[in-house]
Length: 83
Image (cartoon, rainbow, N blue to C red):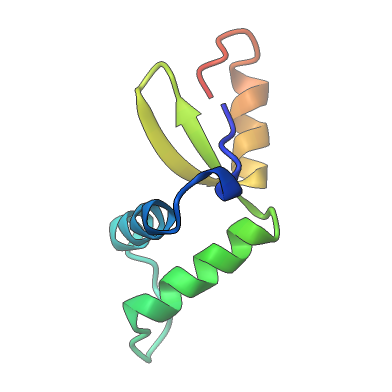
């Protein structure tokens, strides 16, 4: 199930994004990028609709997925409704 980012309290959205950024361990090149900058970048992707907030009833968890990742999971599990 998709969760509209506007339905989340600002601090909840920030915590979700921060958890995602810390978990992903994305390589930003030679220069260290501050956590606040990474969070802001992901927030902007969410606002533009390029990253989706997805609740999985099956896993009872929330995750951030690119629109492409979400479409791929929908194609792989069309009848399960778990994403």
